[in-house]
Amino acid sequence: MHKNVVVGYVPNEYLKIKLMILYAKSGDLKTMHLLFDMLMEKSLISWNALIAGYVQKGLEEMGLSFYYEMRQNGLTPDSIYLCITTLEHGKRAHCVMIKCFQKDNVVVSSALMDMYFKCSSLSDGHLVFDKSSNRNVVTWTSLISGYGHHGRVAEVIESFHRMKDEGFQPNYVTFLAVLSACSHGGLVDEGWAYFSSMSRDYGIQPRGKHYAAMVDLLGRAGRLKEAYEFVVNAPCKEHSVIWGALLGTCKIHGDMDLIELAARKYFELDPENAGKYVVLSNAYAAFGLWDSVAEVRGVMRDTEINKEPAYSSIEVQGKAHFFLLGDKSHRESEEIYKTIIEMIWILNDAGYVPDFIVTHDGVKLPCCALPNLSSFKQNFGQDAYDQLDVIGIDEAQFFGDLYDFCREVADHDGKTVIVAGLDGDYLRRSFGSVLDIIPLADSVTKLSAQCEICGKRALFTLRKTEETQTELIGGTDVYMPVCRHHYVSGQVAVEAARMVLQSQKVITRR
Image (cartoon, rainbow, N blue to C red; front, side, top):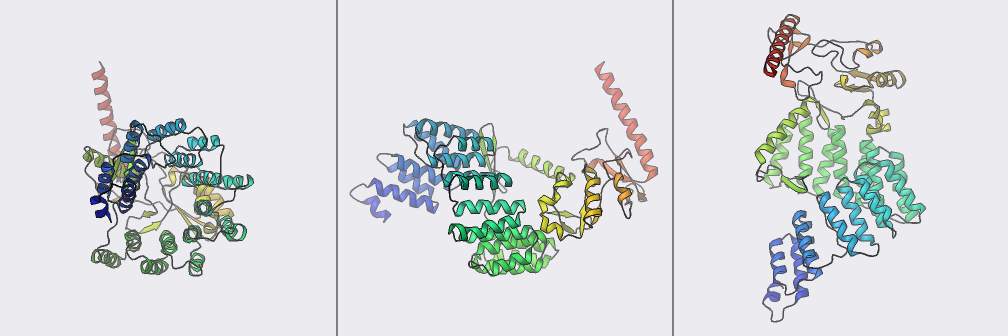
């Protein structure tokens, strides 16, 4: 077909544009661009096809550059959606859209809202919504999805009901955004109610992604058995997406039997999804099943299943920089990787490990990182919380609400709380609220290490630096466990060194 068009006697511009779209969808951007260059007259449709091709391939910057080139050629953009990576570029495109459209355009407004929300500018996204006079279900869904993208569960629910109050009926995309928000907010009962209302009240038959959202909702709440039964009884149980959702939630809660069952069914339906192989491999690793890890990796190698490289982007001074996994093409890649490694060390020092906390003997336990203990129930979900018997708190010295949390959980909820943290800083002063909870405790164990100097029992921490701030982030390497004798002698030496350094600074100033 293409050969006949190229060598045909009559040039057909329309067919060339159709071929551009065809090659864009297949990912052949080189041929797509060649056809664009061959066009006798480059119309708005051909420019849109070119831009869409690069955007769909993930080359948003290229797409935006051609968008600007189109504007320089005097063409006015129509209601196209550009997946713009930087907020600055997005605002430029927004200005162009305002100038070009005298009337309110729903498609453009929705695209701009989506762009602002994805660029983390919620205020600008909501401003576009507020100024949109011609709202419909698409506009409302863009607002709801935007809030859901940022975990603003209350705003999602409020916007959903406001939309209905204004007479707009939700569609399947709207419900998907609402169910996802319920999942992240731990709103199990509300999620069930919305899911049931889809077919009952609106005549919308739930699709695979809706069922997957419900599986995720139940799984996050710790109701794995219910999630599994929901999958088995689902009319779309042959959809890989719901088994993938079950696999992900089982990994969070460490149910190895259900992980293997979900993985086996998932791979029957979608045997080439490399991401789920990695999930299964990581789950085996978390349980120390290294033979199983090797087996999964072997299957991936033998069947030539490769996970597509992930990429990240960051905006610096109005320009988006993209980084593939292991990419070293950037001219400052050496410095970038050096900085990343330093950041990883700092995160480790701060006690941050996604999903798991690792003990000194290598045992991994599921965990969640929290800014404060008062948000624990909300993040974990009430149903999952009710099923807990024991709650462990690590790095307890950093939680200001430690006393109130422990008293409520132990005295009122009847749960066992195991607290681990520093009772004192490197100067042997009280650190945080750890000492305050001793009157609440059933028992107290003072843990110790081995003195790095003599090997005796180490009860204290010696800081090998002249820094004086109590919390030294990223400073693991400047501390050492020591016994009482070497703590006292070591502190004398450190203090003497600090005094010498201070005197040198005074001499230098003079």
